[in-house]
Image (tube, rainbow, N blue to C red; front, top):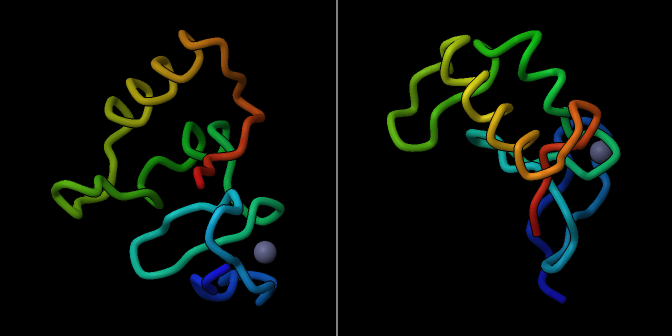
Length: 81
Ligand SMILES: [Zn+2]
């Protein structure tokens, strides 16, 4: 499988098909990825992919509420494949 890059925190190689966190310029492995609770605590360290602006507390809460409404938990990692 194609290598996507290295985790920004632990340097682990992340390959296509694995769960990982998409950052602005970096990616993080599942173990190092932030959780929804982290976004709730520090919305400004996350960015809106459309506008590239830091998330406001309201935007972060809306995203978290949507995740919780789908049966998710605050401890879930923000990862996708
Ligand atoms: Zn990592």
